[in-house]
Length: 564
Image (cartoon, rainbow, N blue to C red):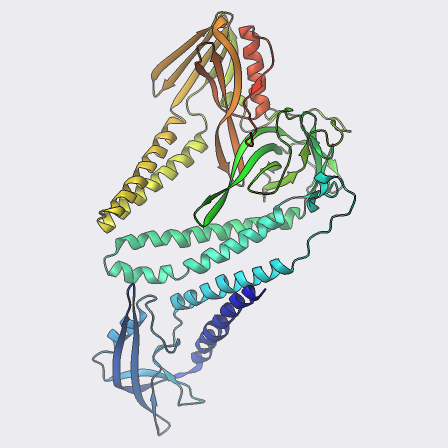
């Protein structure tokens, strides 16, 4: 609490002693009048330290008003102190140097008050606001955090219901916390980056071309503001969204299903994508910093069943995750979590919500009370399966063709990221003439960017044609027209498994892409599929491959407990 009070006091001090007085002076000075004045004294005071140089212009003026003689020494609105925010101090000194007569702004109600420049210094004001928002905001947040009242947990509940959010079967989405985070992060970022546009002209005038990079910060700030506004509009439209699970909790090896009521007029043509993800999360520590890393263990997708509801629309879904996955857990530096995400493109504001849900093995009912038939994404999705893989029966058996130009959106984002890395490396190199450590840093930055660019080109520039039949398996990979073939006889194949090959962030959710590996007695692994979203899609493909190869058994999921 004392720690929060200290930071709040710092922020409040800058607000009351720096920001508000400057704004008030700028407002009241609009009624002041100009009078001729004489420059009596002028000096540019320079203060140098190890890593910076600050300036302060000092002047004294003499003027007459209504027959009375006055002197003044206020050059600008922000009185006292030296700074190097922008070029105002040096530019003002250059403008006054060599001049005997100037025009001075005088307060007609109190002629002893005068100022040379009555314009606000927005860069300096933004710099002060950093302390107001960052220090003050952090202090207020710290005090709120230590005084918050957690939701009480009723006694006598099962151990898995010890988490306050799961005490009853009314699980709230993360929309409200996302909204607060969006505005907090947007305000924080823009407060820090607000002085940069005002400082940029002075840095460019010095020949510092690297200063152009500074424009990225307010550009990102604008994007964050747009994101926060969109989250606000989304909240106003849909409000709190509650998920009721069926069964409760979700059952590993059984059913994970539920229903959500929406304030949305019912329309059977709406398509809501539902994603169920099992992730293992752990805290990775590097020195004094730490970050949470999530690795997707299993993910499946389907379309929600859209029904008339109490508030307009009711969404229902039902998954059957395999029995070898871990249940929900928390505590320490490693835990498992299950998350439901529902999204849809709608007129006006799109819908996107997520819920962390309890999923356990043998903790309750294994099947849903109200049965529904899960709807595959192909029943109206904008990403039909044939964009990823086309499947057909031929005389040689089952043919799977993964075409060129798959995942163009993912490839575009990867190319942009790689291009930014290479562009920054080039900009740093040309601006700084790097040597030693800087040269090594730039080289690593450029190398990483080139590798990302190569991967971005590979994603749409490769194809895969797989033929599975009684004779065996043939896989031909095409990379920009070059062909690479691998084969295995039917009696050499020992198994087929699926595993997550790559993960990508799409908006607020992580999307996992599966690959299919065929194993042989010689220890070889042949890729028979890649970039396939949704475990049920992969299981269906593997089932058809097993039938074509005349292999027994079901699809094998490549998963291992990270704790083992």
